[in-house]
Image (cartoon, rainbow, N blue to C red; front, side, top):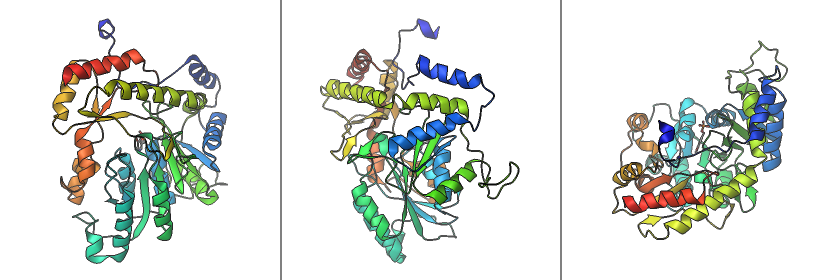
Length: 394
Ligand SMILES: *Cc1c(COP(=O)(O)O)cnc(C)c1O
């Protein structure tokens, strides 16, 4: 029945070709379905792309970020600065270790962390007392340690303002963890996303720029931490440990060979796929010009390569976003609000006592943002179809 309907434009779509299928089939014809050569080759491809000393394939972007948190030595009560305008896992990985996410609001143009507010927050948190309190959640856990790290998100495929972030973090001895899960292949002033922190993480869920089904990769230049994270992803087996020997509290965060084979085959076409995404973004920008109530995404001059992840428009305040979304759906255009602010997610608002009004820029972006159908395989006709749906729905 589904197929008899006229072809709706999907929200997102992976780009899988015959070579991808062949690569996965090849693995299935071997007996080596985990911890084999495909992992090594996929990791090497990411090292080549980013110029990192180490790349570690993991089971998801979230598990990758979690290992970064562990490697950074973040423990119960430690403070980690991050943003509430992100996918939930950038905050969850902090909570996994019972550390405390300290939210700093975002730049209204990019949705990335606001560098001026970050500087102020770091100064104030280090001062303590009243100055620190204005950045901390209302409900503060009893065990509250010191500020240790900044987890910065490269939102929608655009790197954060690292020329501003890095000096202040260095000055205060803070580790940067770069959540590049939306930014594989992006560059900031010519340097690859993922390389600006001590650790960077990428993700390969099917709506990302390349996919492994589920999967992720961590990069770092630190030899010791790379060995530690390698142990943690493999049940805490340290280098030299026998199969049933476990030096650390670890996890099964391994990526399997079929997924790695798919990732390896996909990453070979990354350039092409990023170009296709940029083309779709260009078409959208062009066709959306006729709607003065719609703001299209901005790419900063410092973003020397945008790695388009999603295409999020912002609606004029006079438009009720959720009503508009319902009308679009009725006109067969799937859309998604992007993002729902993290501080207002029920369990986080409850635990930490956040309220609406706490992070006004994040909330405004969250209220007005709508992701349109987007992928590397989208045609100009499909972009027109979406814009026709928008015309009918406005
Ligand atoms: C996709 C994504 C992740 C990780 O997602 P997984 O589904 O665990 O692979 C983390 N952070 C951000 C910002 C993301 O968009």
